[in-house]
Image 1 (tube, one colour):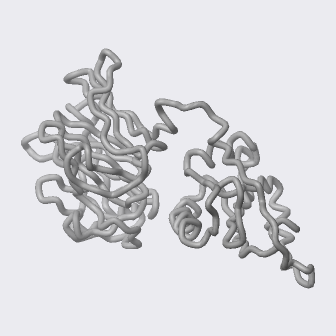
Image 2 (cartoon, rainbow, N blue to C red):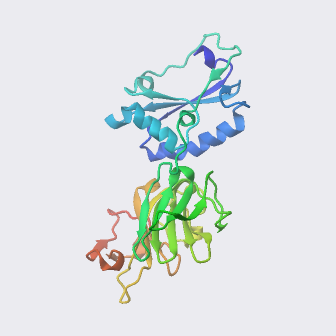
Image 3 (cartoon, helix red, strand yellow):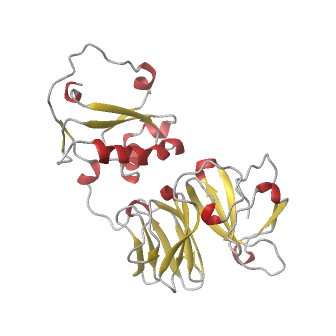
Length: 308
């Protein structure tokens, strides 16, 4: 505790499986960038210091190796304590009259600095292009999308290595912790999770565009706007399907919306995400009719945020 004197210390109590805790990380990163008074990341001078306190809910969250993996996956660069039994959470006290004002430094070495380089860093999802045999990989930790040929060679590397939010040609485009990917012909749809966006990659034009979301986390649980005007929250996965119309074609993008614990759908023809009360049933088929048709009632109990 003596090493923390002279600093503003923020204790972030979190668990790595909690989506609300994940939502807070960009704010913590922004605070660190703005207020941490340091030229050398191995030495934290007087200023702001964030300390993560991981207070587990489930047995697997108590394992230090699992916490280390989460630190790497979420690019956490501040110290993290494994409070396995939640004792700090239960017994937290505000320290007073400790003579806390004195100069000092806290030596910090990032865990990721001790690891060898890796071509992939916590890849989130993989999609197969059955027509060409290509694989699409969401290289989540490197904030990029890879298109890999059958030979194993990388055909396209889009985005990375740093997080960002930019549309345009492949060399300029950027993502922030992309997760789910789906490919149809030469179009890839991406759940750009920490940007709260759905992105579209056109392999023929070699350009990236945004088809849903406004770039900040939304709280709407109803939908009803066109894609580029509709706030969404932490899209985690996507899959292309058909609407059950007479002409069978891929015209719906189903979205697992982790931030609101719901399933959304984006109408690819119109680019809209209609309110759930505008839809009564949704005939659901998998790609190329591989799955049996299922009809899902759209009721308040089912609570899809928006169905397309």
